Amino acid sequence: MKSDAVFILENAAWPALLLDGSGTILRANPAAVKMFGSVLEGEAPRLSAIWSAENGLTPEQFLVQRGHSPAGAEALKFLVKGGGTGAFSISICSLHKDGEKLFVFQAVSEAAAVGGAKNQVLETGLAQKQKLDCALQLARTVSLDFNNALTGVLAHTSLLLGKAEPGHPWRQSLLEVEKSAERAAEISNELAAFSQREMEPPRAAPGNLNAIANRCAEFFRNAPGAAIAWQLQFDKGLFAARFDEAKLQQALLKVLENAVEAVAGGGGQILVQTRNLELSEPAQDQNVQLVAGTYVCVEIADNGAGIAPEVLPRIFEPFFTTKGGAHRGLGLALAYGIVSNHGGGVAVSGQPGAGTSVRIYLPAEKQLAGDGDGAGDDLHGTETVLVVDDEPLVLTMMETILTEYGYKILTASGGRKALAILARDDTKVDLVITDLVMPGMSGRELTEHIRQHKLAEKVLCMSGYVTPADKPADGNCLRKPFTSAELLAKVRRAIISNLGVDE
Image (cartoon, rainbow, N blue to C red; front, side, top):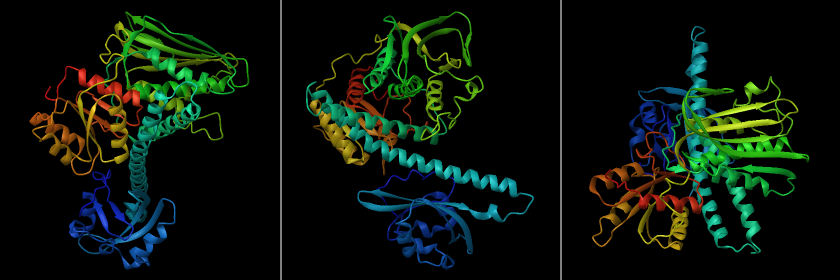
């Protein structure tokens, strides 16, 4: 059984199948083989091999019918290993890969539904947990594909914006495209964040919080029709902090979005302020416990309606919102998760009619922000870079941007092809940029092979879906989607860093 599709449900604890529209099983995870038998391990097995006649329709008829329906669950019966028939609740979704329609089947046993009264509550809870796990895995898959598509849109747009003169007739349209792509990226990242159970703090280079805060404020200051008085007070001697730039920007945008909505209607004022904080002993700000040490703080304060005392304790709860309508209630919950994941905290205070203040604290290093940024301002280079990704759009986008800035670019659509390029006697590669999630040979496996055989000077990993097991030990990872500036800065920093692939 072969398929060039990445099957993110490979290690799921429940049976999962990837099928094409004709009923051929392209991938079956180990849990499916254990449940339905070795019939799934043959060459191009068919769904009909485990399909029960009690389902009424043939597998082919069923897939045609499901092809015109949205994702959902079906009660089906399959032939199980050892003989007999098992009843399952099958979570089904369809997706498109290279113009071909595929189906993902995830099976949850219906045994809990027929259990005795003694174990009914426990078994029902287990079935609900299995169904939730299925939904979370589907969310991860959607987020991965969505991030791949957004990476091309966002990077190409930012590249064109960098080339367009201020008075260019298309510049405003490009800005709107970039804003829309950034919004879509936020939704995708929310989906990824809430579907990923484990999150680890990033190990990024020291960065300047002023730059992120200013960029986020500019996003709203330039919005049409926003009659808001802005005060930006950035500490010029701000300490450096380590943070994932894309994620922290997402958190600040969520907080600023709330502040803008709070002062909507005219006469509103918003303060964005950064400052250093040095504590010789532990301190507390609302719900945030700060141990002794050095911090940077960004405060976002508005003079809006404020927060009722009974609402304040719930503002970080996922899906809790007082706004109604289309609001998902994920904004502050996501911001809290991102900041906490960086080892920091979020404190909120406010009174009805007296406005709201949100203070974000991040651990800092007692050096001026920017001192630890080895990339400098010049993002050009002449080095040879090998880009490895199974998505052609990503390869084309990265080749376009990096070539524009002077790099010599080689591309490979998979790990094996990358190794073939690296094995050439006439090829010296200074940096390999590889996606982590690829069919056949994963980016992790490719990286380990490169390190063992010293086939390249440096390796930079990238992914829109990174599990703790997949993260490089040195935290050297580029998160999708990214802008052209983020790509160029990360590449330059990776090339001039002192860490080689064997360190």
